[in-house]
Image 1: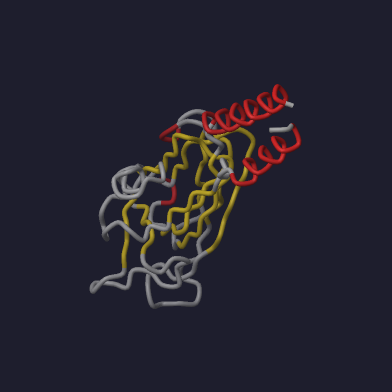
Image 2: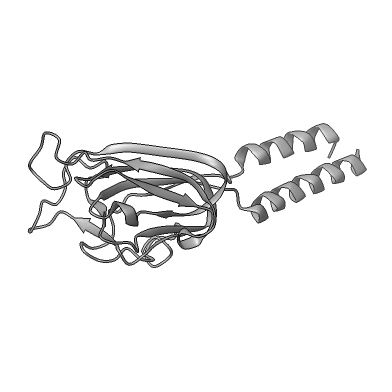
Length: 199
């Protein structure tokens, strides 16, 4: 194998390699209504690596509803019912966004460098009153989008200050997994070294 062919092979491997930094979307469409979301998205049902505290409840429109309308993902949302509504993502993330609906007073939702709202406060989301603006078909009917990015790596978002809010389509920008990136780099280096020796 000559060096030029090995270079083309290496370029092909890079092009076909999975993206290591990827967005993780939690749409809350799976858990049953009024169940704590807990580890549903952390391997209990879906393996996204995202877990929630006990005060993050799933809410699905059912025969007793509707509880929400006009949500970005129509099947389910997260209802924040208390202080223990923290989202944890142990692999870390560098940005986040979500949609929200609330009739409560404006609050700041914090983004922290450690799990469970510990470590350094890296950023925050301003969550303002919007739920009762022009519709009366459900408690959560207007949805605002909010996003943030920051320096450093975050591992949790504390939704507890926004008790009474509905949250939907939470998206986090996951950091690359170092072992995957290292293995790809080592594999490509081996291909190039082997080609130089044969060439």
